[in-house]
Image 1 (tube, rainbow, N blue to C red):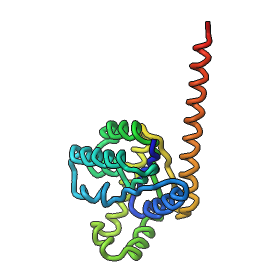
Image 2 (cartoon, rainbow, N blue to C red):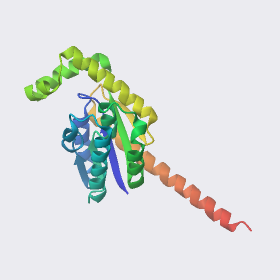
Image 3 (spheres, rainbow, N blue to C red):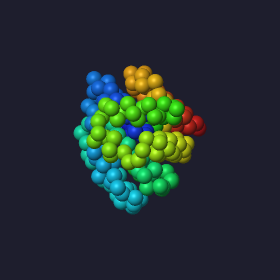
Image 4 (cartoon, one colour):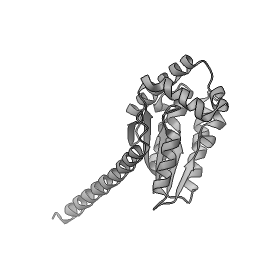
Length: 211
């Protein structure tokens, strides 16, 4: 079963930095595919239809299932689309079931301390330039409110998802620590899952031996 990492978070939370470093580390021993926002988000940037979103995400899942890579890292997926279509995460239950069926999945939700948000937005504006800042509608205070609301909702989704989850505070921008934590969490889950399977197997063998 392929490993799937879905990285969710507001703009400036460090998704790109974390995805890049996570792919670099995992590619030392695995074959890695990155599914960028150019595929997951941008085709539906102005979409508000939940039905259209579900169809789009289902198509992406199909492509990931056919991928020859054994690790897939996704830049934003159903959490972001649930927010943008003003939906509840429960509306994406079939998407989550499909992910759980075909992938060893971990959803990582990045959060930052909101008191640093203004500084982070201005910093990102200066790094990415006019094209990025002009694409983010509204004055700085409007954007802060928008991203604050978005993070609050993403964290609410995190409480309700049926998928394995890790919430990571990325305020300190210690990308190496964060990536290490993500990999460690994934390995721990795999070890725990193997242990559960072994316990169940022993239990079945014991039951078969009972006269």
